[in-house]
Length: 115
Length: 114
Image (cartoon, rainbow over all chains, first blue to last red; front, side, top):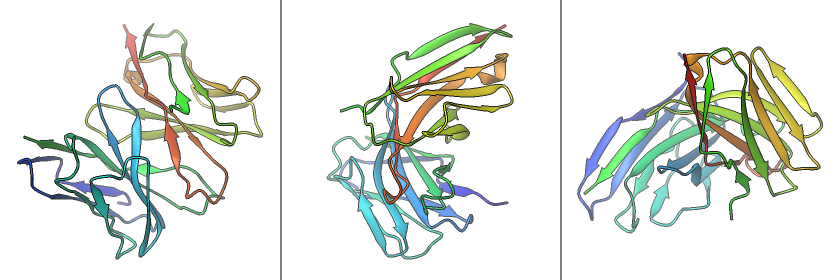
């Protein structure tokens, strides 16, 4: 089955701790993305990567970090510097070439709660 | 600065009738538009898209209309079914080379009633 997996589904952390959210895809897509969704708001782009070993900040990158060491994997670390980390986090991927398709495929999401 | 706007947070429609979801955008550089459907606690799933060179695209019960001069697009669902009840997001993409980045609207919660 081709797709995107995010784990875990629910994650709880204490304030002040860093936490890493997993995202893996077996679609052979070059581009990967991280979004967060808050109630009443759309999906906001945190970071994206068009190719291995390269990534760019999105609209709300402060307090987050990413790595892209493998094509299949794009983990997101929510650091203690992120002021409002509690949210629903979504990972997505696309072919990334910008010619064949703009469509992004999403994982099931991770609900992070920080108390 | 909200470049993609969905001004109706919610919409209620009777089963069998038409659902019309609206989306407005401000960035004239957007040239490709998509609609996604999302159930609670799940990732969005792609529904239908349209390129700026077209004004209509149809796929089964779903039709997207694009009015470039008004910077407006709409999604029509006919006939509406209870399983269509979900949040619908409009998204837009700038020209090639932008990393396929999508800008999303805030979503419209559609409820299809029996």
